Length: 269
Image (tube, rainbow, N blue to C red):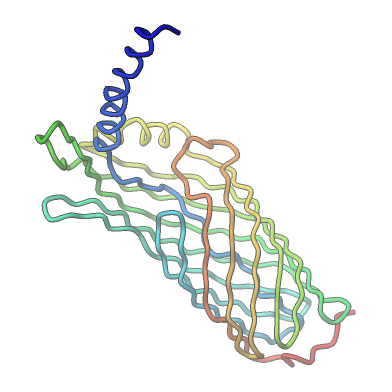
């Protein structure tokens, strides 16, 4: 490379950096159109137990409050329900940009224990939810432009899942690995007056059904009947990976179990 070519390449660097700066500034806040909820891992060992779990839940974008309740019945049957609510607000003084997310599901399945501390359970569940989005984007143009409103979107969706998990439960600690297979279907998608989000919303409308394979890890520590929980959940979209779904969620809360003979439970036969 001669000195002239080297000089030309050096002179091109400011232009490249300027272009990258413009692309970064001319942007909008991200919006996610699905967020995985907290996994159902009560780890029952016998009938007559009631599990209650409120938790703070953090995803890659959406912040939520979740609450889960479950009860163990005779014949190794467990049933329960989850509720999740939250969103993200990026609104400024002269524009609105936010999302609101709500989801409720019920589930049921079977559980069994062995070797006194090990628990295996499998649950299936069905739920429905809704979300609302208001968009804005930054049309920065060398000191001009600024934030511009970019329409709204309203969605309704349903979810069906099957989730086996295996774990241990003692008086002081609990831990489990879960693998949830979920089918999410948007039953109603309405958006209007949007330019910046038009392509991604159109893609979501044209590809309304997604299959998610979701591994999760749950850990609890404390003393019966109260233990503190942390849970990590990964949620890759197998069928539509290009869509803006949250792929990770972390929650922490308090698990309280009533009834049964907590801490001194005999294995199932």
